[in-house]
Length: 72
Image (cartoon, rainbow, N blue to C red; front, side, top):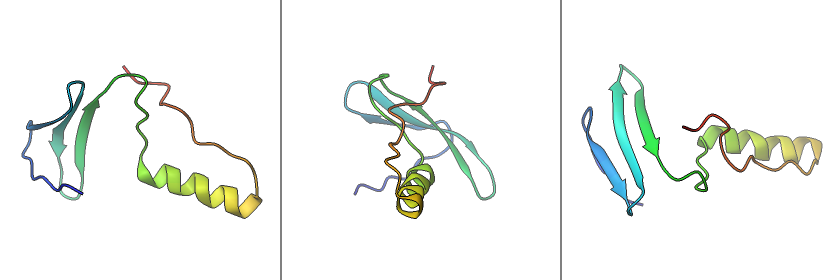
């Protein structure tokens, strides 16, 4: 794992086509912006954890979505 410190409006580049920028810093939260090709899935960790919990609880074959429907 790579840990990098960034300030407001600073960017991290991953390869040629993914950028992560710090958009807003509040007291206990940091808002980030991610720009990536549509075929790259991006999920919040807590959502994937919830899907796994539901799969175990109800023993259902639930699959995580392939990508966010509101991606620009």
